[in-house]
Image 1 (cartoon, rainbow, N blue to C red):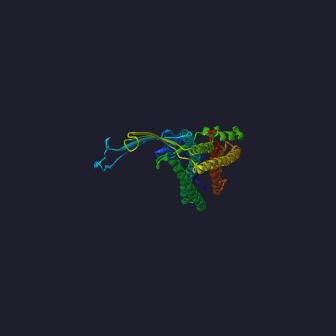
Image 2: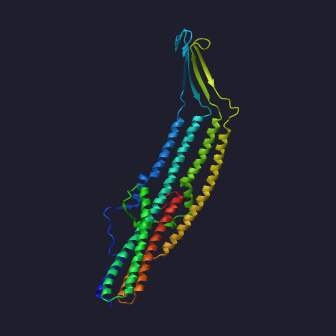
Image 3: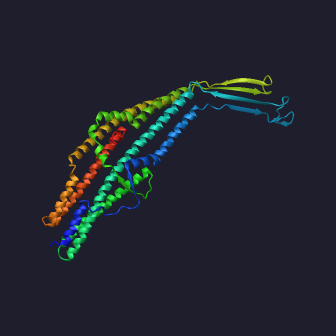
Length: 429
């Protein structure tokens, strides 16, 4: 029942499955090919969240300048408005006039200036660690999303190839139906598979577009950019989890995690704030130099003054207590964070081990062996040793196996990125 024409179409279909037919859809001329290092470079340069956080760091540095400044001297001048005896305004002559002037300077005691400088420097460290922690989080999101999008794009190419090949088979089969060489039920089965693949492909493309949108936002690429992500095959081979030991990962996390350093710096900041509040309990002294033309005894009076509050009631007790509470709260947060860190490192390490074990259990020649096998299946289908239903079942198994392999590769690379994230390092490039 099968004609030579149908045999030729099946051969074409077989070559498509073996990867010799090329992609069904032509690549757009404006496709932007981008690797992970290139995406990271754009991310560091253009990410709006990082830029905004960097402004926060610059503002914190400006606080150091403010803390270093001395208080300005104050100048007070007073003159009489109207002399009722001479009937003159603003009388300033030595005979009938009067005016006075004073200049004062506040002198801070108890090392308030230096303590505020140290507090501001600690605030800069806090802002820097906030920047590094944001960098750590966003970089993990970027890299994980990049790998997820890349392997999804590889799966999309599989759908494109299979849909294109099936459409050719469907076209050839419809011609054979007119000639009475094939049954209608076989046409329906092929159409059903085509429609199913098109629906799955459409859903996958929608997911890819959402992931690409996140990448574009993080790297500040144009919304209409057509991204084609590239990954060097050596990246998959270079990643070897068995070289990493859990205790080394934990030590690395304690040494390099920016959020942990931020909490430790927060305790230091609170301690310096307590020092400042204790210093604020000590009153400052204001010295003044005064000159009075005729309002004091004797005329041309010159006086030296000092002003100092007496700390009888307000000794800054409330702010000192708040600063002490902040230190205790910071220590409690540090203990909680260290506990969370240990769990995060352990869970990421165990998850990576399971994924790596599963990956190593797969035959590395799986894809090539499967391609050869499907070629044999096509030959048996041509010889009518296989029914169309059996052929379609194997065809679906080929698709599912390839999709599972792509997903496993993504999980493996994502596990690598999670370890980098929880350790705050780039242990695995």
